[in-house]
Each structure stands twice: as C-alpha cells, then as structure tokens.
Image (tube, rainbow, N blue to C red):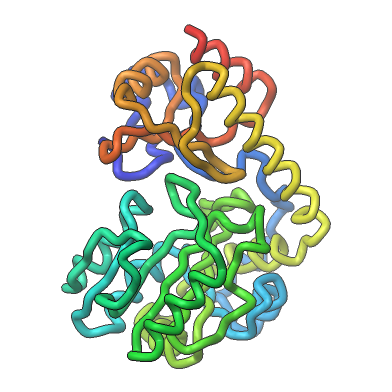
Length: 321
C-alpha cells in the first residue's frame, strides 16, 4: 500500500510499464496547472531574500496580513506539533494521514475525531477542509464555534486548505490572524506546482515566529519563491481556472458514476470512490497503465483529473473493460 499518490516510478517498477506509458490519476494535482514561464538565470544564483515581494503577494491572495512561506504545507504539518507540549489532538479519519502521524510522532495523544464529539476533550483539532480523500466540508459557523472553544483555553484549530482554491469562499484564510487559528495553504494542487514545494501558514505572529525559528533560514528556494510570486499574482489565470476545474471535476464524477463507481465525495481536483473491491479495481487499472490512489481503511480509490481528451478516452475504455 503506497502512503501517497504520485509514486509513478514505484508503480512502473511493480507493473513493468515504463513511466511514459502511465496515466497518473493518483494525485489531486491540477493537470492543467499555471503555465510556467522561463525562470531568469539570476534567480538560480542567489540565496532567497525575504524582501522579494512574495509575502505581500501571498497576503493579497489569501486576504491575510500574517503569512509565512514554507517548503510545502508538509513542512508545517511536521513542524507545528513540535511547538506544543504533549496534548490531546483530534484528527478525522480518513484524512490526509501525515497530520495524525506528525502529531503522534511528536508525542501527542491523537484520536480519530468525528464532528458529533465536539472539541471539549481536545487541545488541538486538525481538519482538512475540504477533506482529502472524502471532500467533506464544514459549515463556517461550526468551524468558528470549535475555534472559539479551543482558543479560550489556549488550544488550536488547524485547518489544512490544500484543496480549497477552486472554492475560495469556503476558506477561513481571511479570518486570520486570530489566536488559536492556523490555516495551511498550498501551491501544489490548484496551481499544479507540487514540485516547487511552496506552501503558506496563516496564523498569529507568535505562532509564525516560532515556526520560522524552527524551520530556519532559506526554507523556500529562490526559484520556488519566484514562481510562487508570479502564480499568486496572476489573477486572470486564477479566475479562469476555477470554473474550468469545477466543470472537469463534475465530468469525472459523471464518468465514474456511469461505470458503477459513484463517488462518495470529492472536490474540483479529485473524486473519491468507496468500494469493497478497491484493491481489485486498482490492480485492474494499474495493469492498463492507469494509476489511482488506493486506500485500505476504508477500502476506496481516489481518482485525479485526466488532462487531454485522449486521457479521458483511455480512462473510459479502461473502466468499461
């Protein structure tokens, strides 16, 4: 069982299909991502500088004045648990597994959390919003009630919004900074720039200062900062990409439904199918060079977006077969 999507080389070795022969649907990365222009050679020759304008552009995009660039939101996921002494942490299941793993590894007591439990027994609640892989969202009033209760006793509400960019109205980023509210954002999914390893943490200054100290200088490379600044400033591309992704996500859900794999949830960037036959589906598709993300608990598959029409036809033919 692969821990993450995108392990194309491992799949190529396992199934004996060259990497170029795969249709990789195992990630939730936009296959029609932001069009990357040539990076000026000088950018590769200099150390990153905080005064390069990235923070200002990110603050405008997220609507929050307190923004810390990090080497992908994964860096923050691993570092944030180290900023607190051992405490009680709730993480929904299923969700992006790195959250529970990071808090548990740092010595915290992690429980599988459900909304009906409330936050009375917790010091920290970590949510993925919309959830990965299920796509679930929470009402804003509900999120804020949990935040207020946690913050009243020094607790945190950590919200991972890696998949929210296509539906920015659902984001809490414009409510930051507030004591006890930490929002994680990523350039990898909506912008299709996962390889740049750029994310952002939105939080009150005391949290960002502690996190910055732990991560150290030059956490994000100069080329990645250059790319991030340009992508976040490209409002025209963002405005055209959002409705396009929502339409393509609906198209994928319809295709899966027509072949007996009705999604249990999803986002503009992926669809999630729960089925007892998840392993068999995964293996049959992989045998045809189509890589999906397989989950064991509960048995399920996540399908990312095909890109070209030939990819859509290939997936449809494989599902029919």
